Length: 477
Image (cartoon, rainbow, N blue to C red; front, side, top):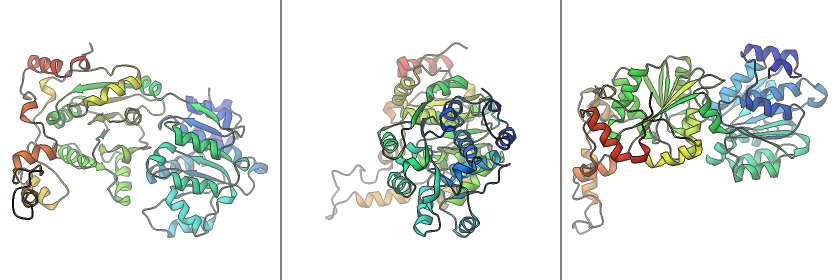
């Protein structure tokens, strides 16, 4: 179905044409046939499926009807500043031929520019819960004239602890019968359903199965690899595939720094992003990645949820996620807007047990490929341990292994009781680095030591078959 077939105002169609949209995506077709008639909708769909355009087109369509929208405004609530900025950008593109003022409100930045925008008058308000409530408490933003309410990434907001804030915002808006509410979530869990039942007016459920979207246009590949070899294999993948850009996911925020530094050291221009990064720095990093100035980005799930990057060629799951739905969210960063993409996953001994649930959720096996010796190049950063401290940066520049001397002394001190005797319950044997290192850094013990990267193809194949058993099933090319 094409947008031109919908009964939309010509000014809206011009904005759709500016965005390069022609055919409706599944979530748009299913949502718009209900939302354009004024019905509330509760939509289950992951990011990257076109849902942003679905609720924006709905809002713009109703704004063109001056009788029903007189003195009314639209409020779009989203969990992160990055997503708020992305929605604002798309809203200004799709609504470029409409006489509407669109504003974005989020924390981490000063109030002056946002307060100035409020005074000028805003028709479409996009923002994060904290800053929206802040302006509402100051009586600078009035939610009583909200005619259209969008709750985007609802499940993510609840995960981040925003449920009480969402309730406060909704209770300050008009009655459910006096506004149209659209809720979008990757999963319609109990909390999401409860919000829909409590605050929405008989919402029409719209479900787009994420596994169908993920498998349709994304080439998925899985490599079995030891945790010690993951950096080498990542370098080998980037050299072999030579993607124009790639988003690399890791489970731990401290690993984003490590991986990004290793890639930079080996000639791959890379930045990292995690929840600990200051807001201005996060925005700067994302802009550099979106513009193509930086081709590679390492991120955690929290930092990259809702992230929209046009023409993203590749996703690398450096770690298998613990949540099967997070796997779908990750690979959904590529193959957006009907395009194709590739998702490569590294399954190590630490996270291999997450694979079964992911494949059950997808209802299919992820094709496994065997990594030849050529895909494990020697890293220029071999033996280096990067970190945020001045000392670790100096060690990296001098090509010296990261030292934990100070930490060891502290632990040796703590391992003694008040009378100076050794504590039996302490995990450190008088500050021994050999025992402390593997436990805290997650290294593999000698007992479980993997084969050498220099092993032959036959030796590596036999090892993986023995170690991973039914999980290791090489697909014919």
